[in-house]
Image 1 (cartoon, rainbow, N blue to C red):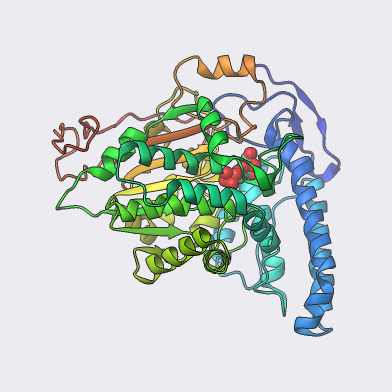
Image 2: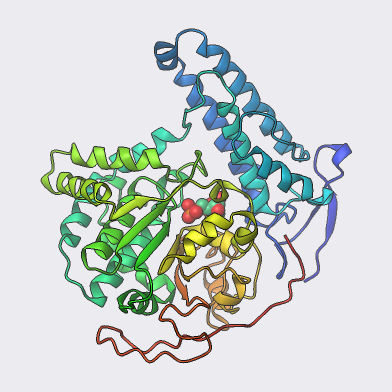
Length: 486
Ligand SMILES: O=P(O)(O)OC[C@H]1O[C@](O)(CO)[C@@H](O)[C@@H]1O
């Protein structure tokens, strides 16, 4: 594809060349392509988010003063100033700067920034994943380094609102899913609810309500059934088979790499509870973010808040759901995994083994790791534009701690595993299909290490009556040469 050169963004000293046209195939997403979603997001969406943050903290000042005293206003003023300056840095496409404060992951971030080549070290020229993660990391560092507000989550109210306005949706979902029997159909229905809840993620504007509907009276089940038409890859059968097989020699733990709090987490928990109740997992480990992240991402405190909120509901079903989840947490059937800053780093997952061996080893000890949401998917695929028909396993670039599932609605141009030609057909019928979050993927790949103890490359003849079809414990050894590295 021919890419036209165009002139500069505002700041002369940076000499940032932006390119007309969309992101070319086989390259990293980046704001340097002016017709990309990355560009649009960095140009308009991120500044908007930062402005909202300024407005929020300003409007909360009176209650902060009540809580901490007048002195907190020094923090507020300083943070507002820092966010404003960061907006300017973004607008002028400045180079990333090092972290110098109390950030616990300062060394890792600074090491990463040191290694970034200069031409890929500014907001619009960097890989989008790097630029976006860096922005969110900088934003929280302002709070972390303040005197009074170092535990303040600037997105807290959004996560709470997302749950509180979803009462009707939660009630109808809870009613429809309590005590479901162990069957593939039930499993698959719940999995699709988990998938499409990633579409409803309201705080990021992922789902636009039509004039006739509102969040409070949405018929979630009908909508989910409707959205199923847009499920582009459905590997649910493989995931079911992975969980259903009883193997003496391997663990039945499921690691769940969480995405958003609010309503989305509610649906995730319904599914995870189902796994435990039906002996499809002996334990679930929830991996959450250590710091406020991408607005609505789940943190450990949000889990506690969600469960307490549900318990306190007057509605009997919601309250019993909350109590049940509390019990599952107290009995360690569902636990919060040890905190890792790797999840709020800028790196793709194929470097996890080098950068966070402990975390990688933890994942190898489970039966299945489920990655939820668009950002996790981008990190799995390295924020790289693969051929849309490329195999999922290839795109993981060797990241295979155990069996892996990815469940995500499509919010950016990173994708793989589609049937040949599907992407072009979709583009013709719906030019915005890759950023609409109207389309979904449930993808799965076996680990190299065959969990039933056979050597990889051999065929495992499953005899379990519950398995839907025999699984080949094959070793996928295909390698791709990358034109561009992170
Ligand atoms: O909550 P999710 O599904 O990870 O979505 C957030 C992602 O979607 C995006 O909006 C991409 O379109 C990014 O900002 C981010 O990667």
